[in-house]
Amino acid sequence: VTRSALVTGATGGIGAAIARMLVEEGFGVTLTARRPEPLAELADKLGGEGPVQWVSADALDDDAQRAVVDTHLERFGGMDVLVNSAGGGILAPFEEVGWRHVSRQLDLNLRAAVFLTKVCLPHLRAGAANGEKSLIVNVSSVAGKHGQPGLALYSAAKHGLVGFTEALNRELSADGIHSVVLCPSVTDTELAAPFIDQGISRESMIKPADLAEGVRFVLRSSRACLVPELAFFRSEGSLTE
Ligand SMILES: NC(=O)c1ccc[n+]([C@@H]2O[C@H](COP(=O)([O-])OP(=O)(O)OC[C@H]3O[C@@H](n4cnc5c(N)ncnc54)[C@H](OP(=O)(O)O)[C@@H]3O)[C@@H](O)[C@H]2O)c1
Image 1 (cartoon, rainbow, N blue to C red):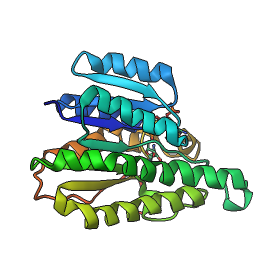
Image 2: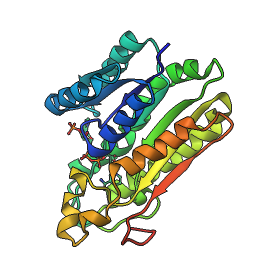
Image 3: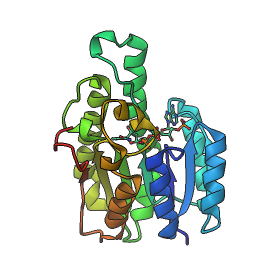
């Protein structure tokens, strides 16, 4: 039986790198995000090496997310890994952020991952039933450990993801359902473009492959080895930004 993974935010730098690693590791992969063209392109690229499909869906639409999970199960018959990588934020002082953006940022960076985890959990539990390890990967941020100026809502939501992951491990890891939260500083993807204007060089940024290799390490370690959190730092940054 092919082990399988669902990856959100798959059109993004980090989601795509983790998806590529999962295909290399022999997983059947469902890629999801909103934009169909980059999803189709990535599925084409990775599909030569293993079973890959894509589904376009908005992370804020619960019905669409349920349909993504159904499509995954129809193709692969179960689920062993869930990667919650969809996310993003607007760089702006809290005083200037409109209420619409407050809900949207909390929903995208926290609620969407919680919802999808809830929907996928029975399948991840089944995946762990035969002594294997199931894995939930939540992509948080250094902003999930240390609140960042200009990113108050994003920081709040990403802190939420860290607490959610810790609680999941305390409830589920003994059953073989492990969760790991990734806490990277500025990573070289589209999302990091505004930081170049702030004088952060691309060379100093974390690469999406750094994160993918971290997740590969977690996947390859045994069920007895729980890796609750992975931190990633820029070459020129401090440990808190
Ligand atoms: N890059 C960094 O510096 C950095 C640092 C720390 C943490 N992170 C986190 O890493 C994760 C991945 O980001 P990235 O760096 O890979 O950035 P990215 O290249 O901008 O990717 C963001 C991904 O999220 C998806 N997405 C955004 N809104 C969505 C929505 N409403 N519904 C469904 N999908 C949505 C995007 O796809 P579509 O636009 O196609 O929907 C894209 O696939 C995010 O959670 C981010 O917060 C990034």
